[in-house]
Each structure stands twice: as C-alpha cells, then as structure tokens.
Length: 303
Image 1: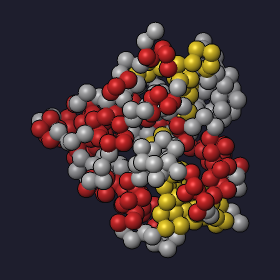
Image 2: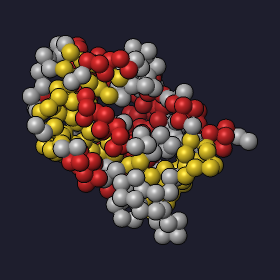
Image 3: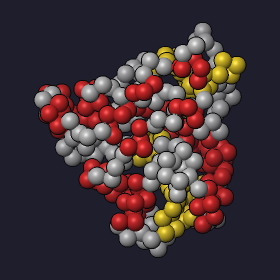
Image 4: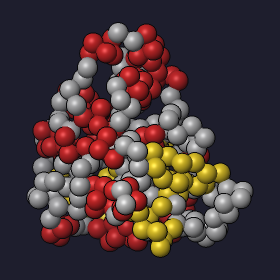
C-alpha cells in the first residue's frame, strides 16, 4: 500500500454538505480529481465535489491531516519585504475598523506567526497568535487564548481547513469582546471553477481544504452567532496593484517553477520569472485580470 492510500480513511467520506445538509449525488454533482500540490505529496489524488444546492465545495476523501501537515511548506516562510507589504495591507483592514496599538488582537491559525511579528514591528503591543499545527511551540500553546476577550480576531485561511466551521466560529465568538471585530479570509467557492483544478490549485489545495464556502454561506454562519457583516473584500490581502505583487503573477510564477505550493516559500528565481513574457504580462496587468477567487468578510459582534 502506498503512502497516499495509507493516509486516506477508506471507511469515511464527506458525502453530506456541512452547510445545507444536501447529500452528495455522484451522478449529477460537479466533481474533480485534484492532485496535492505540496511537493512531497505530489501524485496524491483527491476527489472534490460541489454541492448542487448551496455551491459549497467539499473534499470527499478523509485523510490523516497530521500526516499531511507534518511537511507543510508554510513553515519555511520568512518575513521579507514582500510579506511586509502584504501584511501592511492586511493590517489596514483592521485599522479602518478602529484597531489601535492598544487593542487586544488574536491571529487564530497564525502558522509561524509572521503577521504577529509584523504587527509588533508596527508598534501593536497586545498581539497574540495561536495555531495547533505551528512548528513554533510558543504559537501552539493553547494557553495564549486565556488573554481573551480580544478586540480584534483574524481567521485567515483557516475556515476551509476545519471539519466543523460552526464549532470553530462559536469558539471564536466566546473569545471575541462584545463590539469586537473578526475578519474571516477564505477562498470563494462561487468564483472557483472546479473544472480547472490546475488554475485554482491554491484555492482547492487538496486535501488541506476540507470545505470551500460561498460568501452567502460564510455570512449565514456569522449571522447565526449574532455577528453583523460590515465589510466584504473580493480579493485576498496579497492581491495588490503593484508590479508582480498580484495573485495572477504569483500563479504564473508558480507554473513556471514546478507548480507546487512550495515554490512560494523558496528563494525567488528572478531569472526564470523575468525570462517569461507571460510573467511580465501578469506582473503588469494581473491585478486587473484577477479571478477574485479569495474573499474576506469583516464581522462585528453585536451588543
């Protein structure tokens, strides 16, 4: 038995939509077989399906996530100039809603804590990060949540990784101060074309993305908790109008390399990038040609 099959639980499948309860119908639902694009797991193939009612995308296969996260390439990321630019844009989304250096902030699912480091470098004093899969033991320590209530919470690229989104959001609701804000950033299933897995490999990100939601689906989850949606962003924080700092240019560079997720966390290959007419084109025009396949919703917790 190979590693790919060993990691899949053959006795379990995600055959019911966790948003609307619709059962998967293999005869009529839109499906796709999507390869893992983390380099070490290349060749591992997973079946995805789209709910015909609410349009949520689900990974049918249930896997041992500890096995796949054991060699997750994001741990190699470093806070360089590019990431600082992206994170400043992300910080602005909170600053526009009143966040100051004195407010208490939590990055839930912070990976190796780069955004926390960036905020602290900008003078934000009460910044905390938590991620049970973090390679940094300081961020994997659940006791950091004892600093609640938090005035602002970031849930960036996390919701799609968890089995029960409502349970996670309910937990965050208990950590969020009354009147506080939470920003939920996640791929937008409504904008993801399941028939083009090579184009949307980062959004589909099998098998790490268990469920990919629509805007209306995420809004309903928040409203159930009494949260009010106050702002919608139809782009990721790292889709910028500056030369080469947009998602289309990033996808082009990724394809020029080996197509893996790992390519984003390795030294930039300037010769390969600048030697490609396609990269030059998307470096200049990519922002205006964005698929807008990532979204963020800012919620405010009601009184």
